[in-house]
Amino acid sequence: MGKINPPEKVKLIAGLISNDEALLDKMGALLEKRLRNKVDFNSPVIDFNYTDYYDKEMGGRLKRKFLSFKKLVRLEGIAKVKLLTNELEKRFLVDGKRAINIDPGYIDMAKLVLLSTKDYSHRIHIGNGIFAEVTLHYKDKRFNFWPWTYPDYKSEEYTSVFGKIRDIYKSEKGA
Image 1 (cartoon, helix red, strand yellow):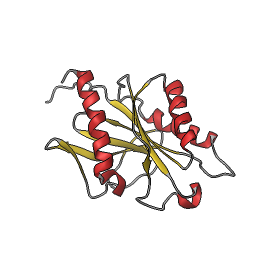
Image 2: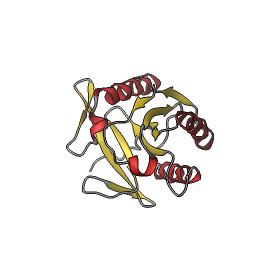
Image 3: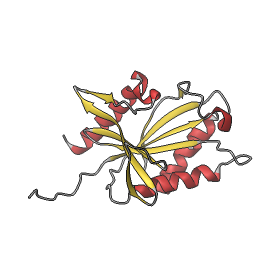
Image 4: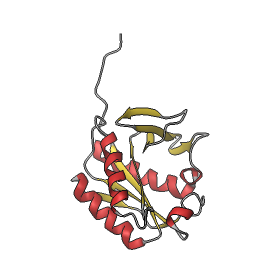
């Protein structure tokens, strides 16, 4: 029988998509306040041109930004973060359409996990209607993708950002 050990704390992240760069910054500050956790990494703004999935709802010329948060968090109750980000998305609806998309997740030494409201064959329910997906795995000193990984998350631009966040996490853990 294996010994049961609590999981290590993880590095909370959020990916933001909007065509309003001021809203990206505003959401970063609002997430800090609502999560009671300071942003310790703020990526440059990246053109979001990997898919037109959000264009009908959010318009064109979308931008992406990634944040990570200083205090490491426990995995118990992490589904509540996705519930919070859904609430914040609703708060900024314009004519019933989202002005911002918030993709929360976390990084640990081995992987990047995204939280979702959508079930699929490679997602696991973690509570309150929220699912978790291992989007990237860390091997050979870099993040690597799976067959189900979204095209943008496969890009060198994104994996470089996640590598920087993982380095922050690693230094915080003293690993």
